[in-house]
Length: 259
Ligand code: PTJ
Figure 1: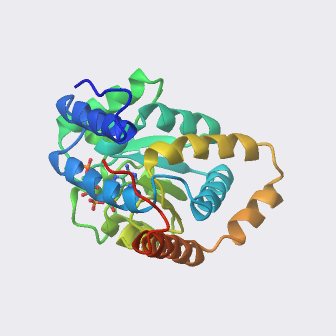
Figure 2 (figure 1 turned 90 degrees about the horizontal axis):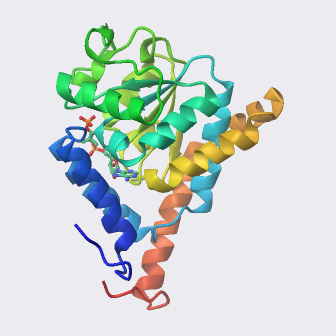
């Protein structure tokens, strides 16, 4: 579909097109389009920008990934359609493994997602077919199937656009979880150690930039960043931003563009 360059919602419509294209290529599950709509609604309220608490979370997330012994980036359909190049980029900077993990798991989608990531330079993609032979205890969705070389042994797992159950189950296994979720009220957002409340398309380039910046910093400096980070405070700050924005709009202090 041709979107006129002057369209006021151009950026958002282009992201939608990427997802639709991802659905056509067999990467995205149909409910993934609905999940994106929920994200868009929060993004609209947030003014479609990266706020300071999200920047703080991005900094702590980069530090945690760099400190990890076995970091793993978990990739679902939406992530593979929206930011494949940045998943590969983040894996390169941090040394994290990449693993496919799907809620609506089919062999075809696993393979299509792995192929897509390889097109962008991924050397190895775990969690495809028989490789997803291990099980996360107490989890009954298809997300329970993980790679024994990846999520099973990971100490830090990055879970963008996730549903809540797995984050809770992975925390019970003692793993540290980094989430990206535009909804600061979601179970994933609440259960993760670090939640980046931002659109994945804006957060991923920033996360790579932060990882590059912090890569040569002393370990102690990174540990301080992680230890001084408080996810509850960051989530509360994000909710305050929503409240303040809604208040300003209701008092006519922010004029919204007419789409
Ligand atoms: O590919 P699969 O089979 O693993 O399925 C993936 C989906 C996303 C369908 C599945 O994980 C799911 O149903 O997720 P939920 O429970 O709808 O949660 C997705 C969360 O991601 C919601 O809280 C959305 O607000 C959020 N979200 C959606 N799009 C974005 C987003 N957060 C950041 N950036 C986005 N672009």
